[in-house]
Image 1 (tube, helix red, strand yellow):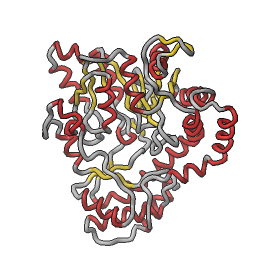
Image 2: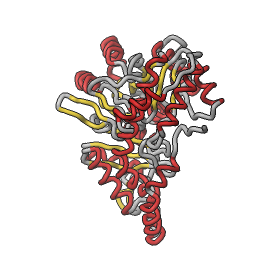
Image 3: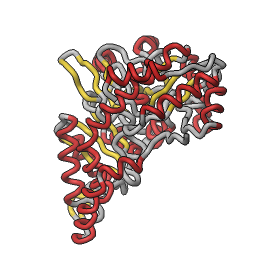
Length: 396
């Protein structure tokens, strides 16, 4: 049985008729970049998130970079983030002229460690402390970072927050005053619509969410050549515009997002039930956190054996991520070494991502867990009883 890591074709089938009509409209009105589709998407995504403004952009990396630039961050500044994330998080910082400064992750949630951040900020020299301007917490794998505590620290040290919510469309976290969606808590929340995301386009796309009207306007200017009107430019900006086709796709998928995320959560519950006897450790979902399960990641010291077995049995899998950013050649100029961020380094050696998408079938979950079991040299066993019980309980 071949099992896909993600299945975009099934998502496309669910929105096929809607997209046929949208494509006819785009073809007829020839508004290919910006225009009505983008405006409607920005309004609809803002309502979904519960923020005042959304600015559509070309990709998630630009969302991060332009947010930082719009907040005034540039050469000589420093921005704190984690080493366990995709390169774009740090690259966006570098592209502003600022320096990425890493703090380690929490070994359980795999998100930014609040104690590590607090310790680093309190130990800073006055000069370094003055240089640090912002925090970029990453909602890794779809699990929100500890935003209540991070916001407290940001307020205490007068730091901006730019959320990397590129894997966290629809995820939620409990704040002091109730639940909030990832990407709505900091000064800006950044999203990617790369096709494999929970809310994915048919190409590249991104957006910034914010309650700051002035910040939204500046990001919009930066993303469209600094343009006030057709040939009036307030600043030298960039070409980072969301096109109409991608806006139409994410609009159609946005209507399905809550349903698809709910399905992902159900699948994650079944996975957890079935993997529990095997000694592999899924990333936990602490109380007060609601993951959207962009990825279903497990940890095992036998990771390489698990991955090899999955590949041999034509089951899609991945490693997110095999090399922490502080050890990447692109960032070697920062001068980090092995051992600088031990939790991130340890995680990179033991993580493997199992198939996860909204249409993953029960039989595919069963087969995936069977292969994991065989890779761990567990005694072959039938999972029929366990999966039937899990399915009955969570309604998959």
